[in-house]
Image (tube, rainbow, N blue to C red; front, side):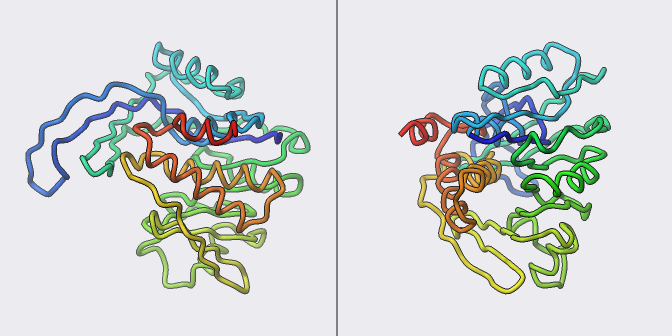
Length: 279
């Protein structure tokens, strides 16, 4: 069991199920799929908690009933929420527009500024995963690198993400840079970078290092909802790396977790992953 700290979002997701794929200028009917727990904090943290790791989440939610619901739901799933801050605005609701083929479009309001407090004592943690635009996350990561494994998700912009392992999707990489993937990864993660992983859905993932590139196959799955697949992949990778697996074996484990995620009608991990971990 590892002590894992996640700096990631905790969201209330409102699901809108469309009758057909999105297209420019189209008109669509939808069915309200209700509200569900989401965000990278939940999507990544719940599977890790099921794998018997101690998982603490650093995030922020509103001081309203939705915020109360988010904390209660995450806590019930085994995530330590003591480090979550409360802001005075209402908790933002994410709109997840789902098409019949399982693809999704996310619409969200601007989030309040989130400023991290003083960093924790890093010797108490085995790994930290950064998937948030919180101010102060760069300084947190830099100080953590001396004491524990640091993983990060590539941001939507070019902000630095100091880390040992940087994760991105092929879609996120499109149009970013003319540099090679490894050289680009260094511009984001800095000299501490050991591995840069670029996922590509059903085509698996590529592992870039200073001297090599390897491909790891995806796990075949029936896709019903792609929401949270990247978060599940990150969780499986963290689980592998903190359980003593090498990077390639950890990527294979991550592919298994992502395969369960896309086959589940939710963004948080489904019962199939829980059963897999229990076995």
